[in-house]
Length: 217
Image (cartoon, rainbow, N blue to C red; front, side):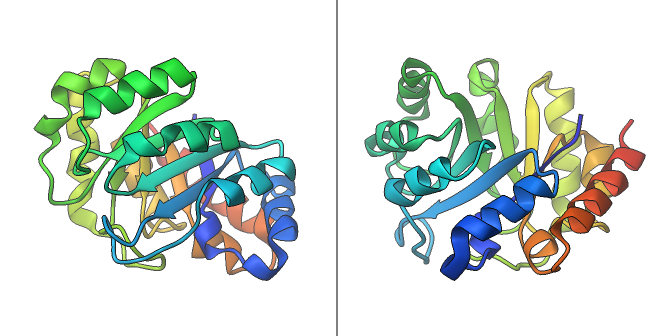
């Protein structure tokens, strides 16, 4: 089943509650929150206090993507703030097994994100512990980037490696790219400007979902 996750990074932060409500009413399945620390990626976004504020104004599950160097230091804070899913990067500095131990203890759903130029085989020993793999279809750090088509075979490869959990794709997802990644086996699609730029968020979400579902095998 395809899930559409609007990325809060593309929202208008001057009216955040309205933006969140608009995509929830528009049929979004979850809300994606990109957390950047200015070290792992050359950009800063937000931390647990904003996640807690968003959690107060929505019933949607919150999917926190930690683009930070030391996720182990912060997973407790994000879980307490209301994150239902937390993904961290395999390229981060902390031992991934220890981060997964913490996520299991906290009772949140665990995912690992992987950059376009990182070999998937780094994930192989960890796959049985994951509820989700986040395949980056851009290099992390900024919204609005162009989709990298070369990542599509990586989605198929994950399935061939035996991974049966959710495969999330983040970066350049719209009505054109959604069917491509869905046909390869992706189930969670993060869309930023493709959802928040149009005034009619429901129409945007419906269009992306229809394009993806039409391509799913």
